[in-house]
Length: 404
Image 1 (cartoon, rainbow, N blue to C red):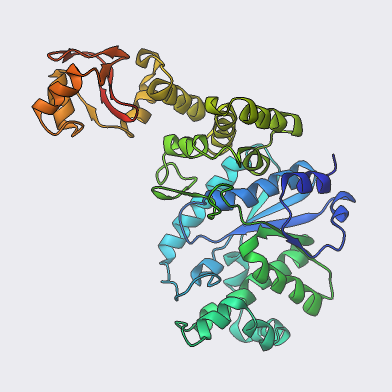
Image 2 (image 1 turned 30 degrees about the vertical axis):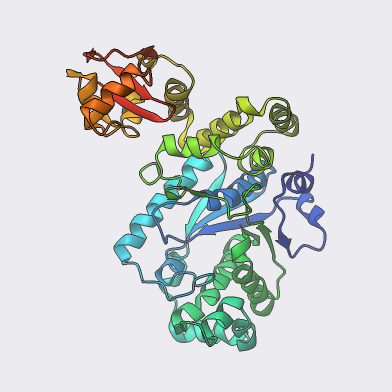
């Protein structure tokens, strides 16, 4: 299957300046994809576009992955109702390093080059920028942007000159990469279309060259219609310190049946036959959630690696699938203890139920135990039971205590 056919089948194509998408199949292209360091991690929204990048790399195209040290000093105003708070230079530097590290994980083993737009902006003279870039951008084009109109409207909060100029900075990134690395394509999320088009126009006006943009669609939850990538705790991050590997895995495991195959097309490298098998599993036995297990395993493996993925699978099986807690390693137990109340051995069961607030009193704890609602390591609990070894206490389907 050609790259253009692959992208169409997977649902990656939202908007593009290519009159014919099969141009992607005619030879090697140098392209770029960028993320601003507005946070110290990408989200799974960024990951959707990053997976598009993987397909381009695998098709033999040359990738330049940009961390926006310069654009991050301003912050993209598109989609924002109010002016952003400026990050400190220290925060920007820390965030850049974190995003570069995630590039290296998601694209492990692939051929790519990381670039930072601060490297070419730090020495640009302001007057030179106005003459060479600003002179080539019609004001009507900038004023026509939807976010500018919204911010300048009667109910808008206004916009600073800095944020108004953001698209010039990003547009010049494309010009620089075009000149220095023969980059002729930018890949981006749907929300970056306007900024990316600014670069195409600048290349035409300044360099007399031709460049293109391809954007991915906004991913939505097939059942709710809401923007994809939110959990009960907020955004789903790639950084395990912001979204734990366990919670990351659980997010994918709990996705809706209606969209699981389509999510796999975007977020995994599984082929047509494998994804067809996933859809068959949903159609024939949705309760087993085998398709979701495959999706969760594949995406967690890409973002966090095979070892951590195997660990959260074992932990999930112990919590929900009848697995034996004695099969968990020390690292597995560390993952588990970060997610559920954890106590040291030596307490009796009633104490543990009350201290964990699973039961509000000793009396309620006894009633739960006597009613058969509590188990220890999969066995019905006893009222005066002492817990003197590593154990998993469970009440109902979703209340747990780990004793170590």
